[in-house]
Image (tube, protein in one colour):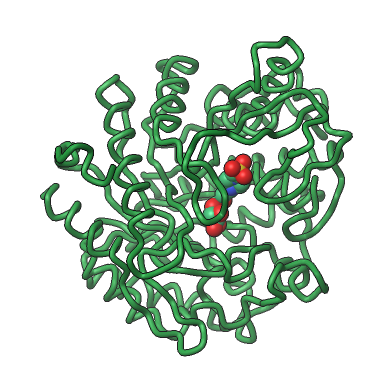
Length: 437
Ligand code: GBH
């Protein structure tokens, strides 16, 4: 699989952007040097994070960023996607850290691509409140004012779908609410925050702005009408609810009626044009009528009262996280977006793609990335305009409710010593990038 019958990975356009991604809460540590986020509060509650670990130290990137930027340099990526911690920006000296990081990246010839929100909301704020969207715009303005002379490419939000679903509907992530459908305002307020952030970035002169949404094809468990209907509903909740306000300026299937506020006016803000649309892709989801006994989402049992259930995708290799490896799902997803949204679809950037495997000789990761990069190229050959690809993640990190048990990095982190060791996949990706030059 790794060499696809010995054929090299096809050539991508010369200006294609190759990168790797991380997020602040997952790598920075130095929790005592900033105000608290909802994730600090959640993590402190017993039983929330699987191994009982915290992100207080994580990879200690806050103190070791120079070493990490050197790893990026050695890898030879064009760009580095990181996130700016809002609670850190609120704290004395917080913006200075991102200032130094951006300088270090520029000196290494790596384009900084900050995400302005990756789930670590200040503990004093709440996405159920509409005002949080306006506060976010102020945060964005402050960051853009400080970094905008060196940063050209920005990402507003990371995966508002997962933050809504896992954080507010199911309670598996911070802030740990289990509101089921009452979580919908959280989706709307984040989307509004996205639109306001695009405006704030434009006001600060930014010319290259996108969002990172999580998407995957939804496969009905069977051709039975009840399964097809359930899958359609899941697709609305996880994919279309977050794509269509941004791309088309409308909510799918009457969902707008369930949202708070003056939705028509808000949709005008949410649809503020972006320069590209970011997609985080991991795997498709197989969905059927309620009642599947194995119904899980990201390792979490789904409540039986939901109008759908998630089923296992059989006959596929799985990663150490148990997620199925389905590279052609990426081709299907991208071609489907192109077909559905046509000329309204902005150029696409894959802002995350990756997998969890243990070990330094991580052949499973190499096979996964190799196959997904080829699947991406197939979508481009079929006419989808894709401008970049970012691997999740540069290094092993705090995998949210899974703690440190899942390793997504190209670089291994020993959490006892904080020593970084490039894995086989790091050397492999470096060679892939070299071959593209
Ligand atoms: C991303 O979320 C996050 O942006 C990032 O912070 C995180 O570290 C990374 O991915 C890895 O998890 O159980 O087979 O149905 C990914 C969101 C949610 C995608 C669960 C896969 C379920 C796959 N994921 N989903 S499956």
